[in-house]
Length: 375
Image (cartoon, rainbow, N blue to C red; front, side, top):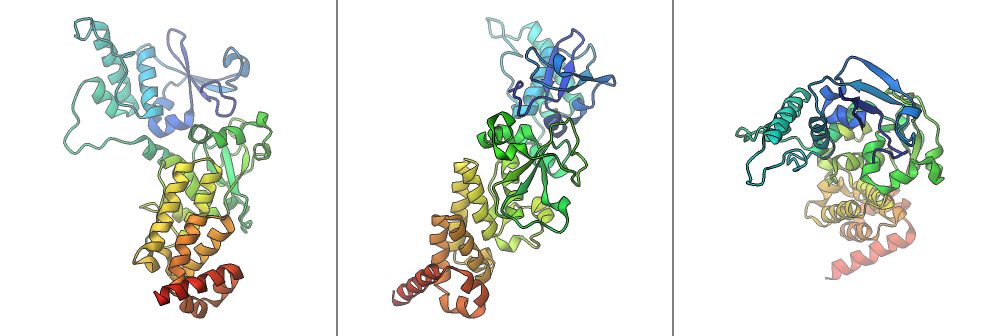
């Protein structure tokens, strides 16, 4: 929503006829960077000029040339925000006999021209009614958003895990993000980032970070994120941007540092991180993603090669302890069955991790091991 005080627009396009179209610079940088750089004459628009209710706040003005029409700009913005290639009849109408009218053909040409200049070649081909070349790959919106998260540009909110120990370097404790993406993803962010709601999370001051974007547009906030570890926070943000849950496979992770986790391909995490991630996603009311993450932990624990997937007995014990602390009973049941099969080995090879588990849980492991042995 353009008038939202939580993720209000920060860019306003001004056409030759005086029409104003607000937008979000972060999404434009991800999808149509050429459009964000368009126009050499720029100025800052004050709150009094932002909208009829003054809700837009300070925005950067980008004046476009006379060759850009309102319909063409809105078509490109629709593609940037939704990734939709099928243009609605609002832009391309038909006459009563089903043939393209002269006006709709002219509109398609305008859209194709602007889309080509902005780098939205998929939309340009669609406007020209051209088939893509064999092997052509259509860029997904989630891919562009994930690339935006990795670049860490135009960030206006910063997160730090509320359950992790503070690192030696304070600059490594925060993760930059973009309000417009997160607020569109979950209701929790729309509430947590809105000062009017009274959330404790929304009152944090801005902080200097490694990105250098902490003082951008005066809307920066440092927010406490419901995550037990920094790895879980990074994975949760990636889920919000990419719209996908990670695989649980320790063999695909060579280092657990957060920078490597954010760029690892394919998207995989350890079982312990997946348990914390499922708890964070459930807290954010992303129930489908939380269930998918929990099912992947259970699948890895019940697989024949669970040792490789979970990172050995040590990884299974760590994940089991995390499931007990987070009260993730589905994951706990699956992990308990895997560890119970090697109960004597776990007690002998990993005494520290084994003793750190609650006595009642160790007794449940022993009983499950006895039942498996008798069976």
